[in-house]
Length: 89
View (tube, rainbow, N blue to C red):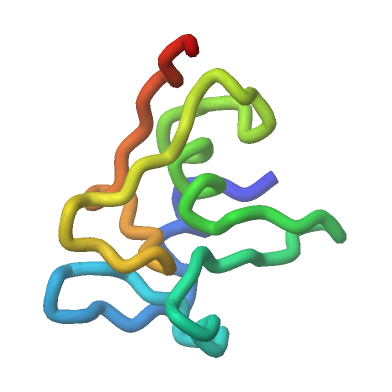
């Protein structure tokens, strides 16, 4: 799996809100989450970054990756995004 150095070195453009937008992927129509392939598996980039930075199991359904209030969905900035446990119900 990838590590924190991979997150920092991932090709990106930083927009005026501080969002890290992948520079080597075309934006989805309407702006959307960015999916990437790692070891022939598809991952949502923002969730993968949070799981790496906070040492969380990417596949654990009990937590969710959350974007900052001014972030665009394709943002993967480890500082502007956060995680929290899902609420029951």
